[in-house]
Each structure stands twice: as structure tokens, then as C-alpha cells.
Image (cartoon, rainbow, N blue to C red; front, side, top):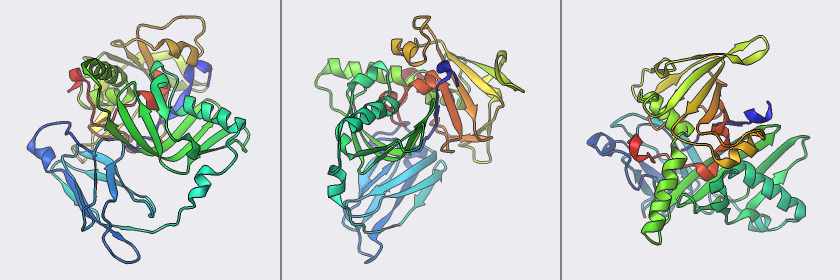
Length: 370
């Protein structure tokens, strides 16, 4: 792809509500609970961390090894259970309105070679790789300047394959986002970059920082709203709720010809034509051919986007232009704007420019989107 069409594979495994997204009895009844035990002895594990990836919703198991996560938004989630001395457990689940699931887990003991995390030659080459990883994973937006990985020494990088850059984390990444006011624990499962394509997969857990005063609280509130507004998740939520036009999205379909996608052969389409309800009333299928061009008119470009997209002959635009292609047809979307298929779609343009520095937790909604 050309410089203006840099892409990123979507890995939405987001898969711990401290505060519910919506009020109402139906969400109070939507829950998952269970018991966590040692797989070898059957003894209950107390203090295991249990959370839903991509959210603020989490808990720890009690003395009997039991946990309960309630007031969940219907849709699909990734349940994550971790404890020092045991292998991490993950499970992708679907949950319907009012449904209560039970998931009992047997955790396998493991032996960690902790010296391996801190050993190794973290030399100038590693430093260069770290800088590259931060640009690709955290991002290059203005908010990225206020994001810091607190334990980068757990990262290892590989460039053995020509043109391919991969990363692994020997322990969960501890990330501080002072632009949005979040602490993030990120379990990185996969990361690779080749050409203009970046893909990663993992389980983040968000927690809110405590503001020092009302000024910082307002700063974070404003930044969170700006980060969410115009994002892919915002766009998908408006499709599900049939209000994309009202929220400032204009959609065109770029058709695919014998020579690939044509930027000139496009037509405006109705947002309602893109998704259909499934047999499960809380889930939706999205299907289209070619590529979507999505223009968000209620937000301006970050000035750094021009350089990132290599649009060196112009200044920042007053609208944000993004593109979306499907790798699977259909993809499945839930009410939170999450995509079930890990790499089911590829985003380009402004959607691809926004990385972890601009990500809000799953339960976040801008005030005008609630």
C-alpha cells in the first residue's frame, strides 16, 4: 500500500466493570462466575486476578477460589485469569442479555525463570527496537507523548525474518497513559510488523488514575471524549444504533475492479445497509465488498497524522478520513462496537493512525453518545 494507506490489522480481544455502562436490571443480571482451583491438587486458589479484556472490570478470587463479574454488557468478551506461579487462562465467551454463565477453571502450575526477564543484552540495538515498537504499538499521535511503558525490560524483539519485526513480552506490560488518565496492564500475545502492516493481539486491563485536581479531571475527560469520538469503535456503535449520520459519519463504498480498489469508483451508501441482526438479538453481522471510505466531520486530524500518512503536501484536514476492508465476510459486531473475529478486518487511514495511546476502555462512551 502507498504511504497514505498505511494499515493495521484489528485485534479486538477486549476482552472488569467497576462502573456499569448502562443502568438497568437487565445488565445487573448479566454475569459470569465460577471457581478457580489448582489443576494438580484441586485446592482453591485465593487471590487470582479475574478480568474482562479491554475493560475496567475485574476482581480477585476469595478464600474458596470463587469469583463473580456482574453488570456485563451483552456481547462477546475475553475472560482472563492470572496468578503468579500459574499459566494464564483465557476464554472467549458470548453472553446474552440477562444471561449468567458459570466457568470453573483449573490453573496449571508453572515455573518461571525470572532471571530470563531481566537478563540479556539490552544494548543500543534493543533500544532502537524499543523505540520502533513504541511508535507502532503506542502510536505517534500527540497523546502518545504522555504514554510510558514502565517495564520495557520485559520486551524482546526479533528481526531475523527479512522485513519482519516481531515482539514478545516476558511479563505483562505496565503502561501509564497520562493523556487519558489510565493505567493499563497489557498481556501481549502477539505483535508483528511487516511493510506497512502492523498487527497485534493481547488482553489489556484498564484502571482509572486519580486526578490531582479538577483541572486534571477536566483535561482527562476532554481527551477521552476526543479519543473516542471518530474512532472505529465509535463508528461501529453508531452503525448498530443506526445513527451514523447524526454522529457525523459519511460512508462511501470504493469498489474493487480487476486492478484492485478504485478510489474513483465509489458511491455513498446508507449506514443501515452495512449490518444485519443475527439470530442472537444482541449481535450483528457486517458485510460489504471492496473498501469503505469513512469520513468523520465532527473531528479534525491530529497535526502529526499528516507526517505519519506521508501527506507532506498539505496541512491537517478539518475532517478525519478512514478506510475499512473485511478479511472475513461477515464479521460479527456487538453493542460495544467490538469485532469478534480477531483479524476479521483491516483499517487504514485515520483509524490505523490511532493506537494504544488513543484507546479508551470498552465501557467508555462520550457524553453525546450515551
